[in-house]
Image (cartoon, rainbow, N blue to C red):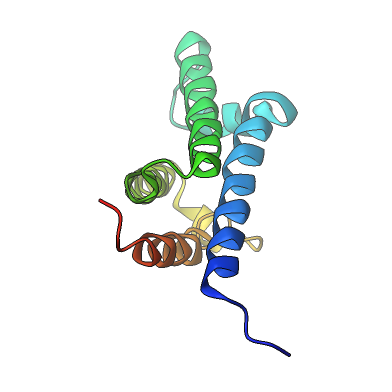
Length: 128
């Protein structure tokens, strides 16, 4: 098997992360919002505030995915992605730490995702 080029790996990282962000945002807003409302409800975030948080978070996710696809200021995009994941992880840990033990790993998967984002960030060393 031939080695995969750096450019191909970078594109794969961009496309896979973009898919993750866009699909997560769409799922949060359109496909399974009840899961988000359940999590928010357990933190006593309900009603209009829950709508704002859920739609705002989902929209942010979609925007990050689309931003990745533009390749505009990708290092800034990577830094923002890591910040968003850290905030989401901290909030979910405060709201319901049992998600760390969930068999499908909705929180633990954040660690390798952050590593992939850091890889992409470092691969764009020539950008500011």
